[in-house]
Amino acid sequence: MKSLRMLMPCCLALMVMTASAQESQETLAERLVNLRGQVDEIQSELDIRREEHKNRMVYLTAQLAELEASRDREALRLSQMQKNLDELREQIASGGMNSDTLLPFALHQIALLRAQISTGFPFKTIERLAELKELDTQLSNGVITAQRGINRLWAFIEDELRISRENAIYSQSILIDGRNVLVDVAKLGSVMMFFRTRDMDYGRAVYSSNGWRFELLKSNSEQEQVARLFDSLRKQIRQGFFELPATLPPGLGGQS
Image (cartoon, rainbow, N blue to C red):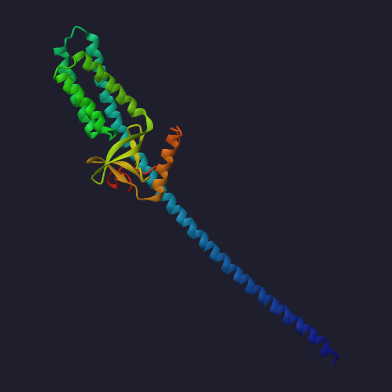
């Protein structure tokens, strides 16, 4: 009887220890399940971040290629303009040339500039072409001498070179969906241009094999990027890092 009384507490203690061990195993198993779930969530998030990073690098590579293409086009145009300016200087410096001699040269240079502007960067194209047309008409009709026309042409080319270096906001009329609309444009040299309508819609000038066109931005994030650019230029902040929408269509290295 005495042995039985001693055995019962031992059995109870063993049962308690067994139950405790079983509970610990269940708790551990539950923790392992939770940890495994957390690991899966972290892995999924890591995969998403990797994909975002990959897409980001593709986007930046496309933008770099776009800027390099625009830079090369602009460098070629500026090189031709500088050549024209040097020729003008040589003609003027040579002296002894009368109006009849300079006139064909001046008209030829005007024709070259008109061709470049017509197919080039779409900044105030109508106004710039109108200025050249007026100069051409005055020279052709003898309203001004060739010497004076050369001086005005010289000033025009120097102004073109200045425009190519400017980052600033202007107002101009552009064609959107078949309509002429007066907008504010943010011009970055002669490489990129973005616009803002009076209704605070934002868009971009897009270069393609058929030339430049203007289109509205549909993405909220891209509209915010351009809005920040306008705000910075308004505050006279013309240098720094700006994330901007691509200005080449997908087929030429940009993104839609």
